[in-house]
Length: 460
Ligand code: SF4
Image (tube, rainbow, N blue to C red; front, side):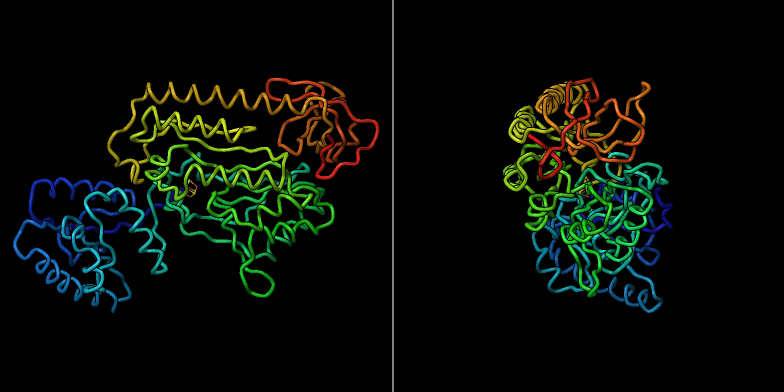
C-alpha cells in the first residue's frame, strides 16, 4: 500500500530567465508525488532548490553567498533534530557543479537543466544516505510493486518473501519510492520459515523480492549472505524439493548465482529476468544501467550453466522517445534470447517518476501496434518452447484437482501447467509425466510408468 506522506515543504528560488521560471514549475511538479508542497520562504522549507542562471554577472558568487545563508538555516534545523536538503539546479549547476559540491558541503545535490526528471531519484537517494525514509504518495504499481500475497499454505507450493525495496531507480518505476531501500531478511528467519513450510507439506518455495537477487541477508556469522548461498542453505531442508526466485535485475546476477543454476538440482530451470527493452538508447533513458548485449551475455552464461533454462522477461513498449528502430532492437533481442514466456506492457506514465517528465511521449496507437507485434513474437516463442517439451518426460508437482474427475494439475520444472489422469494420492507429490500434447494454457500429460534416471527433474 502507498503510504500517506507527511507533508514536506519545498522552496524554489528562481534566478534569471523565463525558461528558469518554467523549469521551476516542472521541478515542483515532479516533486509533488514525493509529498512536497510549495513553501513561501526557505525558513519554512525542508527542501530548498536554487534554480540558477549563468547569464547574470557573478552568478556563481551569488549562489555561494545564498548557500551560506541557507547553511545557517540548515544548521539551526539540525540542532532541532530536523533536516534540510539544499539543491542547486540550473545553468550554474551545469557549468560548475563539481566546484559547488567541493566548495559548499552544505549543498546536498546538484542537478543540471537536462536532468530535472532525475530529481525524485536524487532526493530519494539523499534521504536514504541520511538514513531517512522518504514517505511517498505514489499509488503502488501492480506491474512492479506488488509481490504475490503470502498465502495461507494449502498446497505444496508457497511464496516466501526474503527481500524488499530497490536501489535501482529505473526511471519508469515507483518501487524505490514506495518500498524504499533494499532490505533483506536474515538467513536464520528465512530458514526457520522454510522449515515450517516443509513441515506442512510444502515441496516448492518461491523466494520473493522486488529485486530478489540483490539479497544480502545477515548470515550465521553476522556477515551478508548472497542469494546463491541462501539457495544452497535452503536446499538442505528435507522435503523442500524445488526452489525458485523472482524478480531479478540483470546487474545483480552474480557468478555464484549462475553457478547455482548449474549445480543445484533443487533450483528449477526457469528464470524471470526482465530486460524491458532491446535498444541501448532506451535502456539508458530507462536508467536500467545495463546494455542489451550485456543482458544477452548473461543469458548465454546462464544457458551454459543450465542448457534447458526456460527464460522469462518483462518488456515495456512505447517508452518516451522510443523510435521504430529502437522497437526493432527489442524484437531482435527477443529473437536472440528466445523466451519461454514474457510479460509485455505498454508504457504508462506514473506521475512523479522521472520518465513521466520526459518529452516525446509515444502515441497510444503506436504503443498498441508495437505491443501487438511483440506479443505475437513472444506467443510464437512460448508455443515453440512448449512444443519442444511434447514427448519428453518431466517431473510434475501436482497442486490441485483438474476440471474433470480423475485429473490432477501441477507444474513442470519450467513453470508450465500440466494436467494428467492421476490418483488423488499424488496430490502434493512430484511424479514423472510424459508430455503428450499442447493446450491453450496448459500441457496434457500421462503418468510415466517406468522411473526415469535424469538429473534436474527432466528426462530427455
Ligand atoms: S529494478 Fe527497476 S523495475 Fe525493478 S523494482 Fe527496481 S526500479 Fe523497479
